Image 1 (tube, rainbow, N blue to C red):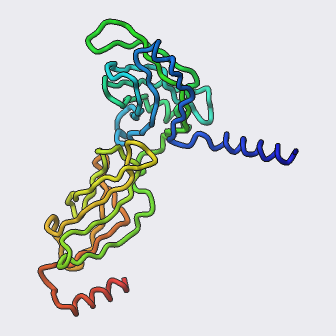
Image 2: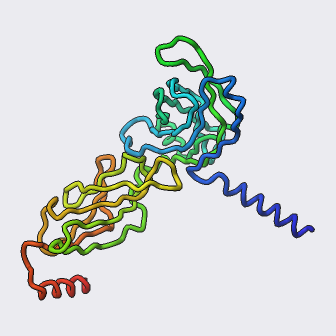
Length: 282
């Protein structure tokens, strides 16, 4: 009996230690009776850090929401907060705004406080429902909207700027453009908002890529399927090109390479054999 109780207790401790997972939102309470009291019920679905605003004095990030009405612009000041992981008393207020009909809240706070503190911060859990005044656009009637409570481990680190290319992306593609006009390749990136994926470049030329939705994170992708057409960029026999990811106007080399054969020259099979031998030795 004691052994069983110990195992149950151990499982509870492990659950508490690991829940909620990073970047996941746990809605604490979803009361159906709220619809009778509030014109708009808002729940937090996901949080995304916008790391393209390094030079901006404010940090910006996006809170994705679900809401029961799309007629109300949202202005939430000092309800969302950042709390220090090291010093829970040192909270930072966040201001968030969203247009009517939009599923995003755009939030910001002065990065000076975060840098001076030198700590990692997380989005503070909201443990109770929070009501606030709201009005339809072009209306002076004051009504009540409500934000549902939630938990998350979403963290903001003042040292974090870019995390564009996760591993593994270490691959070399060999393409004979005398036989294939298009090379198809897969690229893994960090999470991006759907329809806002980073650009992929080869030899200075942007190539076409299709986004792949991340099934584990609604509204986001973390892979791209790209197509290199032999007519879209200049190359010579046996040129070796590095695939470039362009994000926030910054070009970052990947560990993905393309070695192209020139389809206009070197048509003899012997040259192909020599090239393959050299390629293998390299």
